[in-house]
Length: 238
Ligand SMILES: C[S@@+](CC[C@H](N)C(=O)[O-])C[C@H]1O[C@@H](n2cnc3c(N)ncnc32)[C@H](O)[C@@H]1O
Image 1 (cartoon, protein in one colour):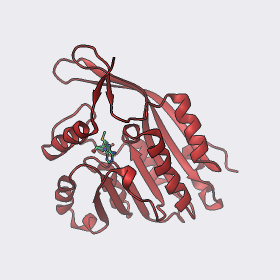
Image 2 (tube, rainbow, N blue to C red):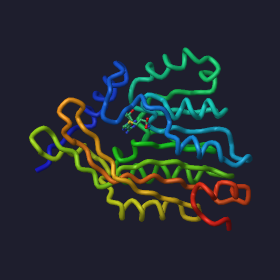
Image 3 (cartoon, rainbow, N blue to C red):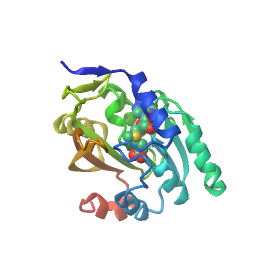
């Protein structure tokens, strides 16, 4: 029988890690990845310069988006003050960022965002909530939009005694079920998914406590002006 961890314990874990700058296996303080920065550098000109960062954590992707000139709505359930403090050292960026303390599944996506980022967070939601959230963003889309998602599937989390850990209500996607969900959500968009194996180890004992197959998803709302992004999704220009 897997050990169940509550959503409250998840919030407590991230609140503590972010407030106290604790190092976690996920490396929350890491800057935005080279892959994401390459995507940012190749965005089409007509894309709305307004972005949504879901589950921003320490804010690396929010800061990268603001540095690229986007206004950003950054949403996380964890207290806002660590990111607000980070932003207080960067007044030029602070004026472009709105920090929202909320469950992302309760954040109503009612406006269009040129870029949506959801990195290492959607696996914590139920499938229904994750799909409804992305579906709202698709519905709000009017012009060229790019969604950048990193989603864990086939997760195996173990405690020190080797017992499996499940988190209350989490999606538990497999690569197949996630692929099917993305096809439904992004009907008519250009979607590229790449897969890699991801592991996290305890810094002291070196015990591997987290293993998963990670999907990196770049979904582009098709539009003639989006031609420049095809090199990133790996698709032929249509
Ligand atoms: C692994 S961190 C990822 C942080 C950031 N996206 C990054 O990659 O650097 C996961 C973040 O998601 C947040 N989170 C988890 N479940 C959430 C939910 N249902 N609503 C809002 N935030 C959530 C956590 O508080 C944490 O900050």
